[in-house]
Amino acid sequence: MYRMLWRIRLFEGQVQRLAAAGEVPGFPHLSTGQEAVAVGVCAHLSREDALYTSHRGHGHILAKGSDLEATLAEIIGRESGLCRGRGGSMHLVDVRHGVMGATGVVAGNLALAAGAAWAAQAQGKSNLAVAFFGDGATGAGVFHETLNLASLWKLPMLFVCENNGYAEFTSRDEHSNVNHVSHFAKPYSIPTKTIDGNDLKVVHAEAAEAIASIRAGHGPYLLECMTFRMAGHYVGDAQQYRSKEELAAMIEKCPIERLKRHLLADGVPATVLDAIQVEAKNEIEQASLRARAAARPDPATVMDDVYTSPTLHAISG
Image: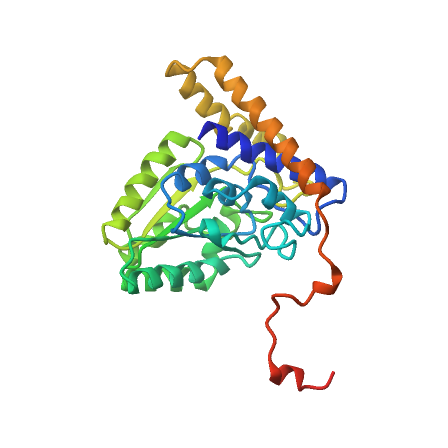
């Protein structure tokens, strides 16, 4: 898990550099500082469990098992990408690893995850669906509608809120009188916990408990992981809404450094941990070289995999 934290951190560092160089279409959103949530939760998921992520989803997808090179190739628009370069950073899908979709629509993934959970339940499978979302998503009606249906039907669904304290550029204090997202789950009788999302050992332990409850047929569960977004809302965000003191305090709570302290205290040699970081760095660099060298999609194939209808074709213009 320490290795995966570094893979995600360094992967997104490379995305940031490529975006600054103009090689990434659109505005990628980084999860720097939030990696422990993705790694701690996904460590308990099987390939068959459905994962629905948000526009800040690179870490979730890598932690679920998606290939580094294919994910990066997708983000920079290459034919070898997860979706042949069609989806980009905000619409990553990797069905082979149970990554069923990312969406740029805030809270748009929640109802989709509930559908996957209902399908698993209807087919008598032991699979569950996981939806990652930020605290800003709790202001959307679909969040409350999904909580209600998930509770009513006892769906095998894990809600994971990465509460980094900001909805885009607006602090939670400015957009909600509800301090903790976990409070929203209580009226629906959904078990919930608010935990330290920057301590991987805590996330891993609490996610294990939540997922065991879901697999045992007890219905949905909501984990609120209090975390920190060390990067801006998107690459290029000047973060003028934050003080230097706030940013400095966040950096001190880095999940990688915290896990490193745990491992050192458990007797893992510092040389082993340093080697893991170097190996992850080399892995990312090699994946980046291959992804950037890959072919771009042929413009002649632009209509491939696009839904068409004879009725639509019959409409002039």
